[in-house]
Length: 299
Ligand code: ADP
Ligand code: MG
Image 1 (cartoon, rainbow, N blue to C red):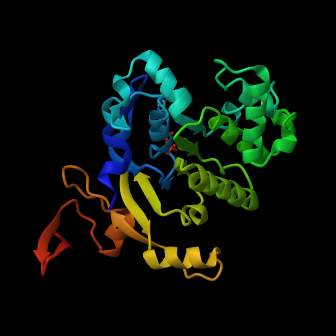
Image 2 (spheres, rainbow, N blue to C red):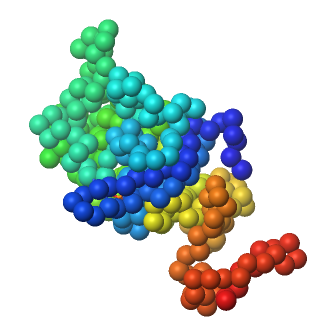
């Protein structure tokens, strides 16, 4: 169970409708979400399910069509333009899906961070030092004078993470940060996120397609059709084993317990797999309570 007092992010019935020409796309369909301070969670889901839309909203880049989003108990979309700019700059760090959006190609790794550091009351030397500190923190200090085009995919992602951390945010959003790198690099980037989570207490939300990586976080949320349909919570015995071993190589397969999520109106989404396993092919089912359990049967 989540600790109510410790909730950092809360989404209540978020809806996002994109209108293009004469078609409407409902990217988020009443999404509810709560994230505790200091959590690191993974978000998975098919392409087009609304993952980036959610991240952009959490990053303060997009407004919902309906619903509310609270960060630290404050309604994000009641903020004025100035407060919103401060939110984007200081409270949330964002590694966006297209890696080319994260770094300016005509600036070096260090310069990319320097331009983001708040100049107020800080001398050039201090800004430089802070930028180098950040690059060291993500393990690419040796690339400080390299332009993005001179860095590998993994190094560019590390630089993007350093840039996202520039103004000391409490939330770090990463939209498919390992989408374009090899398995080894993606594991290393994931380890970096874990370290930032543990050492800085950052709250981190990572969108990923990589189930192996998702399997290493305590909570995995699955988005389907603009809503969170299932939640996987790491099994307590697996977590203890992981902590004791510090490697997952010799651990079994069942790492997480999967739960379906009820929305605020008590609605439940059953995925195709479950429906076909139960042989349910109609739009109507019978729902009964039998011996304290809810049983859903075919019409
Ligand atoms: P994901 O990141 O899970 O692949 P997105 O959040 O990017 O999904 O998109 C969700 C849905 O919204 C998709 O159908 C997508 O085509 C649509 N969509 C996203 N952004 C826009 C936009 N700016 N204009 C119109 N439709 C959009
Ligand atoms: Mg996306």
